[in-house]
Length: 212
Length: 247
Image (cartoon, rainbow over the protein chains, first blue to last red):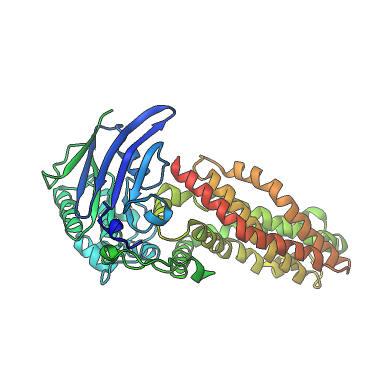
């Protein structure tokens, strides 16, 4: 696995990737690659297939056509699982449990970054005071921030962020941008979808534009 | 079993700092069990309902049939068996519902742990929190129905084998119907035919114990079916969960 070619291959790449639903093409064929330290911004109007693209990359939908590779190897549960972190529209956490309990459970599944704890991650996203409150008492924006804390806590070099700016205030948007920049500086990579209303931090970040 | 599933290959050096070894399957299962127990404790009022249902139905039987000890002693084993099966049905439907709705299943799917193992852990947690209490109160329910004392251990043994089997079968159906609205009655309709052989073997053991015959054979059949289900049901359940997340 640790061959030189595997190390130099992009973390994630797609070749002629396309997806159709009921014979209606949703997106593609797309070709792109995402190396360590890179951010890819997926733009498009509502319904242009941004979320579908991310779900296909995350393995939650089978690709209709084309190929996905992780480290140059065909995508499979072995090459994907544990290194992809998914932040979607749904929080991925139980509303009756507190942030500490939810993050603790996910840390049990995924492991954590060395030296990182739920408390430190919650402090970083600015809602340390809510760590022991049941999630259902938090606002939509605060729940999103708990999702960001999850990204900080869990190891995983490929972030797939579906509309991470939704529900966030201006400071929250800056926080997302800072976290993505930090993650990429540390050798990670991120795929971020946006409907274009939010200015992304790095104007030089590469874009994929999906048309309806 | 636990060590066999752990990842063997070391991650590439460049990714090593980003990607510490994923936690062992044992740690993941413990984390899931603890989470489910905490959730169960938060909703302990809900968990109490099947128990209350079983007690009330059991208490109604002597009123409906008349206090004839001989009749009650003859039918009590089978009646208690059916009451437990019916009492555990409603909870089965919700086994994966909340996790599908809040996106937790998406996190399960991407976790470095085998999905089937997480499904099996969920089955164990579900059995411990919703079914085990029903078995614990069995001596009390048995007393209400004049259950012969020599039959009680056989009834409990049959339940200890039959209910995990039913929860395993139910987990597959629950995963299949998790995305459907109001799937409760659908799940019951699908599970009851599958439950018939389980009930027949359990009832066979109880009837044999009641008439003083050897009751080991039907219990062994239940145990064999349980072993088979422990191996196969989580795999089917994992496949069904993937379908549920896809749609």
